Each structure stands twice: as structure tokens, then as C-alpha cells.
Image (cartoon, rainbow, N blue to C red; front, side, top):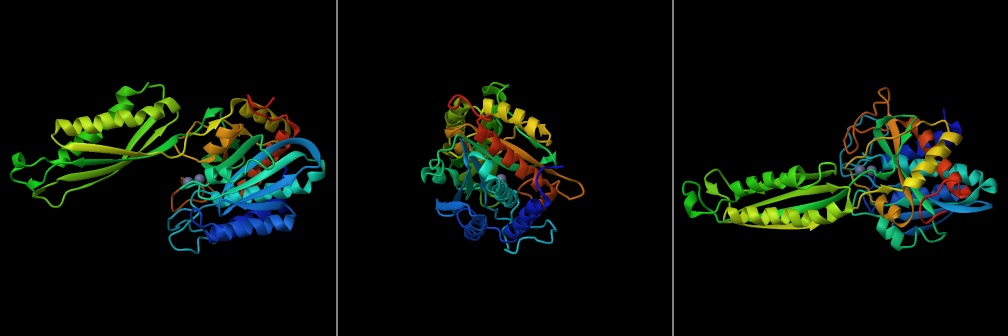
Length: 395
Ligand SMILES: [Zn+2]
Ligand SMILES: [Zn+2]
């Protein structure tokens, strides 16, 4: 059971379905932002636009206290829905397959509860409705537009739906809870020729094969085995037909890492391998790295104080799920003030919410929304009181 009333939960579910039917990709969230503004207007909550389709609302408590930032992302994915839900996407090729519709609806539910109790509320809650989490990233543009500055946020939280955790539970851990996600591109240039005369050409294909295997050596032999990294080659393209020697192969992949020093060293390690293997084959190799979101680091003190506060003031079990190697641009909020990424349990065999995020069959157990709303509300209350706080910038 949660302490959230059935009316609040039912309204959040209705909003979630409305958002789910009209998914919008990053920085195109016009309908979603308008829905958020419509709901905040109905609640009498002040709000402003930032970064195009971002919306910042402020619930001002009547009593003095600190300021909690509550963040929800709003964007969908370029995917055709096959969930079988009655309220499936009405937009071909777009789907809320990562649960951001539920995140937005839960934050609106929390806004409703906090606004209703503002006469007794310590501090304020800043509602951060963020565009483009799936890329190119809306967190930094929101921060640069002053989303954390008026009022100044003391601690920030987000929920992300997680089908590993059962409905009715939430979970978080201190420290790195996901990974930096960086993209890389490799180009290998040889010299083309006849497939029957390899000695007259420089074949880019065996060089590419050797490069793929050698890049795995970074994870297997070059990094402390107690540190976690991933090197994945996702695409490989090259060649023309069976009897032509390929003059060129291109590959792309992703690096995932949690430790910042290791992350900063990956590009040089990969370049040494790409250029060195190519040289050994008489070809040339080049590498380009496109840096993405850093890892989310949950503030250790915030994690401890919020776990204690949740245990005292809520009946929702707080679990400690292991980290993932996914990426999340909430990291930028959590770099500036103590932050907490909370995994929000949605798993239910009965509701069919067992598929991973980004699957066309992805479902959210809507019974979970009340628990997420209660978690956000509890965070805002605890931060407002100063009982839930991070370190070292907060006492
Ligand atoms: Zn996602
Ligand atoms: Zn997501």
C-alpha cells in the first residue's frame, strides 16, 4: 500500500496514457510540454519554459526550508510499438518504450500532492520536466538556462522505471549507478584489388577483423578487473562483392565506463590499437570518439539520509539494485548538487511489464505509479526539512 490517494494515482494513470498515445522525440515535446503546463496551471503552480520544450515548475512551501529538485524526462523513442496496450502509440514509428511517459505523469502526481500541502511544506520543490534524454540531451541546456538557479536547488532526484524490480519497491545505491556512454567510429583504409590476387592489394577486411578482436583487449587485459568497462562494436561495414578486395571498412561502437580516469584513457588506448593493428597489416586506421553523458554518481550521504527517511516515513521497501552500464543525462544535474537516481520497480507478470526498456513490447505496470509519486513526495519533504541532504556542500 502507498500513502498516495486513489484519486491522485488515477489521475496520474490517465495522464500517463494521454502522453503514451502521443509520443514525441527529443526537443519535439510540444504536446507533452503543453500537457505539463495545462496540469500545472490547473494546480495553480507557477512555471516557465526553458531549453525549448523543457518546463520548470515551482511549488513553494509556506515554511522555511531547503529546495529539492525533482526531475522527469519526457521524450520517446523512434520505435514502432508492439506492446498490445489499448492506449498504444498513435504515432507510427514513435513509442514511449523507456517509461518517460510514466516519469512525467508521476512528477505531475507529486506536484499535485505537494501543492495541496504547501501550507505545511518546508522549503520548495522545483519540478524539472526535461526534453531529449534519449539524445541529444536536454539536461545541460536546461541547466544552462537556469533551471537549477531560481530557486537554487540543494539536492536533486529522479526516478527511472526498472523491470528488474517488482512493483511496489524502489531501489538505489551510493556511488556510480550507471555508466558514461561514449560513441566511437573506426575507419580502416587499405587498397582494393582482384579477389584472386591479394598480393596486389591491401585487404581492409582481415585488418578490421583483427582490430575488433584487439579492441577487446582493453577490457580483458588493460583495465583493472575490479573496474567495469564495456567495449562494444555495434556496426561493421565494408566490401563490394565476393571477388573484390575491400579497400575500406568502417565500424562504430560504444565505450561504457564508470571511473572518470579510466574513461579519459580509453580514447588513447583504442587509438593505439586501431592505428597499430592497421600498420601491421599495411593499412591505415583512424578513430573518432564522440563523448556522451558521464556516469551518474549518487551522493553517498544523500543515499544514506534518504534511505533512513524513507524507512521512517514510508512503507515502500527500498532495495539496493546493482549498477547498470546504461547512460542517463541526469548525471549533469547530479554533478552540480548532490543527486540520487532511484530505480522504480514496475515488474509484474500479471501486467506484462517484464520486457526491457527500448523493447517494442515494453510495458509499465501502472499500479507502480502511486509508489513513485510517494517516493518523490517523500524526497521533497525530507530535503525541505533538511533531514535528507547530501555532502559536502550541505550540512
Ligand atoms: Zn531509454
Ligand atoms: Zn529512460
